[in-house]
Image 1 (tube, rainbow, N blue to C red):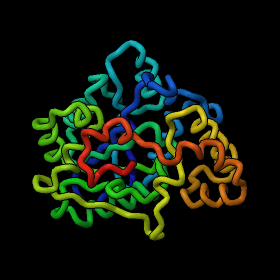
Image 2 (image 1 turned 90 degrees about the horizontal axis):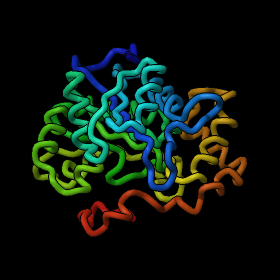
Image 3 (image 1 turned 90 degrees about the vertical axis):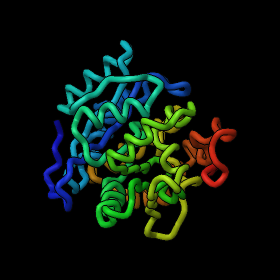
Image 4 (image 1 turned 45 degrees about the vertical axis):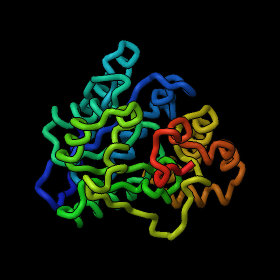
Length: 272
C-alpha cells in the first residue's frame, strides 16, 4: 500500500480512490496504454502519490475477468485494490471506502494522468481548513481548472448517505451527482483556480479519445524527463511554446460526461 508520509492536520484516515476499468466505449483499455514504458495507470498513481497530504491510494475496479489486468497492475504497483460492481460506481466507491476504514474519501478518476499533485493538495487543504463546515468539496462545480484535474473530497458519512439514498442511473454511474445536486442535504464547497481563469472547457488533459492519449503521451515525453513532478502551469507553458501539441485533441475541448445525461442533470449543474 502506498502511504504518503506527510502529516495531516486531522487525525483521520484519508483514502484516495482511483476508479479504473478496461471497458470504455471510446477507447478500450485506456488506463493500461503505455506511457514512457509504464502503464497510464502507473503514471496516474505516481502523480497522485506526489501529494503532500497523508493518504492511502486504492484502485477500485470491477469483478469482471477483463479487469484482472488492472488488479494485477495494482499488485505490481504495491497499491491496494478493491473489486466490485462494474456499472454501479457509487457502490464500488462506498464498498472500497468501507473496506479500508475510511474517514475521508477522495475520488480521482483514472483518466486524469496529468493531474497536478498541487491541485489535489489545494482541494484537500480547503476541505480540512473547513472541516466542520463541508461534507463535500470539489473543484468541479463550477469547474475552472483545465479538464483532467478532477478532485472530489467527501466525508464517509456523506458518501454513505448518498449510497443509501441515490437511485437514478447517472447517480450510480458517476458516484457523486446525488451529493452535489442536493445542497439542502449536504454542505458543499468548491475550489476555483487561483489564477481567476477558467480553462475547464478550453484545455483538455483528460483521457477519453485516441487523440487525448496522443496529447498526454506527448506532454509526458516533453516534460517528464525534465521534472517528473511537472505542474499544470508547466503543461500550459509547453502548449504556448508548442501550440501544435494543444491542437492534437483540441476538437474535444468542450466535451464531458454531462453530454449524455442532460435530460437528468439539474440545469444549474449542466456545463455542456
